[in-house]
Length: 388
Ligand SMILES: Cc1cc2nc3c(=O)[nH]c(=O)nc-3n(C[C@H](O)[C@H](O)[C@H](O)COP(=O)(O)OP(=O)(O)OC[C@H]3O[C@@H](n4cnc5c(N)ncnc54)[C@H](O)[C@@H]3O)c2cc1C
Image 1 (cartoon, rainbow, N blue to C red):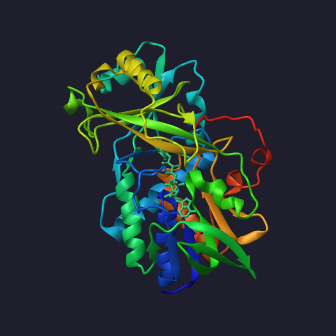
Image 2 (cartoon, rainbow, N blue to C red; image 1 turned 90 degrees about the horizontal axis):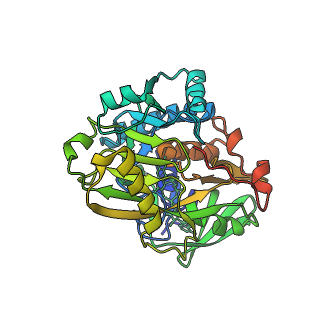
């Protein structure tokens, strides 16, 4: 088997499979992807039917990035012949006085020229009578938002990377990374591979990979979960009748219409316990599920029904929850991406950016908020802010 490549990708989850795809579009057989588990495994962050994709964000640079994210998925849809994004519209709602003010979302969409509607509680309930709200609730509706079909998107990246010539190996953990005359040698599954450039997309295992480069980032890995409910009003929760939504307060909840399972999906954002990727369990966090149940009883009662199942998943949180998308300081041949627990919507775009960093050494996207060595990433015990 070939052992010298131009480009090596470590980790083939959401970001890594996208990077392999975008690299392979330009470099074909010069791309090697290495994944420690089986492709499509459920131990990481990217594998479920759905992830929210939205233009509505608390900062303008994310709104701008989200425009390009939609474009990257659309390009993959054209190339693969598969639908990967489903538009449902997106509702951000919550108390007028809240821990996550809607004004920052409205302001950043205004600055980025994105259209949206401001809705009061009465108008929200008129459009979606599934909600039971009091007068102090208000919302923003942005029609382009919807579902990024996560598992299907990952599979499309993998399939199309291979069609463009990439070699993707599963059950092949990278055990070491060595720097060799401006190139990189990785040892994986007992074999050594050399590459001119390396992309690290290791999710919750990022610090283990970066350790090889003597870098340790202040990341927190948490075990999060989502629950599918067999609502007795299933017709009211079809994607053409009910948008994706985010409850903008602390705790922050979010949900989806029925997609992939016969019932709506609901979760709490960043409500999970700190774990490590290796010692985490797949057990349901019952108190966290109870918080979701109480929220639904109060505000969205018709979504409730028997639990279909609860699925656990990891967040890899940076202290400010901004991504890392950067080359390693002093090592331009190595690029890194970390998603901060809200990255999937950007996965294809992040893959494209990583491919540009690897092939061209630059990208047209503004990566300054995502620098690996930004001041907060240098602190051992940084303050945290998880508002997204
Ligand atoms: C419950 C939940 C809900 C979410 N909801 C949303 C949402 O609605 N919208 C949104 O945009 N985002 C959402 N996210 C966040 C988003 O899913 C993640 O940011 C994104 O999937 C991160 O992808 P990744 O490639 O970094 O990580 P992963 O998909 O985990 O990929 C990392 C991969 O690297 C592999 N790996 C690690 N080390 C090695 C090694 N040494 N050798 C080989 N392989 C290795 C791992 O096995 C893994 O496959 C959610 C996340 C969770 C958990």
